[in-house]
Image (cartoon, rainbow, N blue to C red; front, side, top):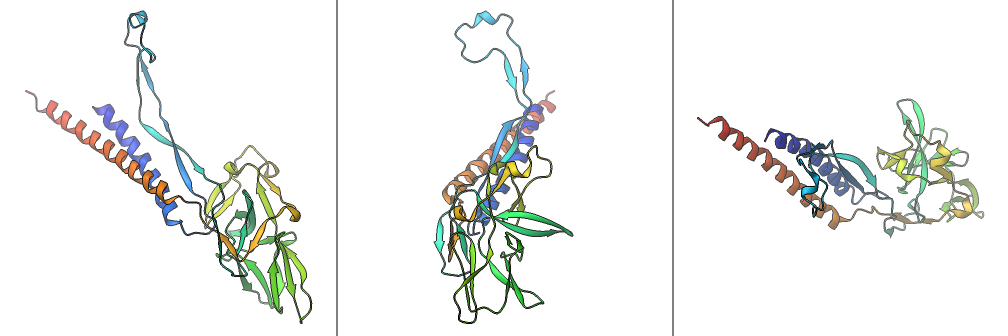
Length: 274
């Protein structure tokens, strides 16, 4: 009874983490470029009890001999679904969708004074004015988008601009024909499962990983880019699946809670024996 209560208590804590993951997916269903997460469970330590004196007494037994007593389940990891979400037309010039799977924009992030490079598929860009009159191309959170020569900055006095399929930023000034003034840098995640979530819909390379950066990410040549201006990639969260997983997980949580309650009642009966 005590063993079953401990198993249920351990599993309930892990199920709560799965519910948190599902809740995070549901809250980001309308976040551009968001990738759904899924919890992977595994069994904790299993104790093998050999309770058969003669293994040959059960020749027709299909399962292994003995009894295996577990100690509950645990959240082994979180898998990210990197499949491309649906593309929606916005007709907003600063919205850019990546049409190739595993392609990502590079973002400059100031992490407590340390300049880091993060990655995102959220193409909801905007212009941020600088003190010198120029403008920077930034994400919805204000982080600069990186080009081939660093953060993309343009002289603020222009008539129009456009972003081509290959990532070229074309700018027209003084009524003249548009010229390329920047190139959006894109990388391909060769080993996307190694990337870790950083919040604000960004990913990064973990510090303690057995691969170098070139083995995880590869630079994409401009001719291999596939961008669509005036469109955004939506999240790939499957609402039906998330609600189904939530109900299933809640049922499992209730089952383990009831197991603890039943074990407590049984121990109460034992304590009341005369």
